[in-house]
Image 1 (cartoon, rainbow, N blue to C red):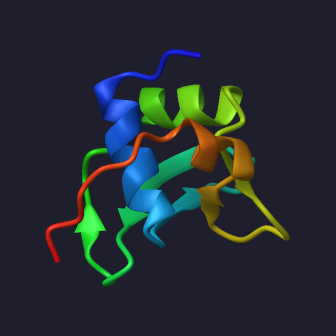
Image 2 (image 1 turned 180 degrees about the horizontal axis):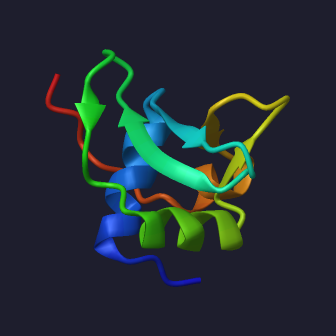
Image 3 (image 1 turned 45 degrees about the vertical axis):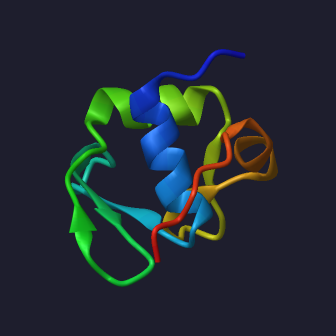
Length: 85
């Protein structure tokens, strides 16, 4: 399965402990996406289109109505990158 650079960036952020928060309206439609890093910073690189692609490929999932996190399949698909910390 090929994964684009943008998908790799989001998956790498999620693999390090980040998550995606969703805000929905009364009818259950998604209003806002917020990607949060492990340090608590908000990152604006996850678009609605990119979120749908990751969810469709089952690389991210939500458990017990919580925030979206990376799945085991997503961890296997993400390429290793050096961490500059």
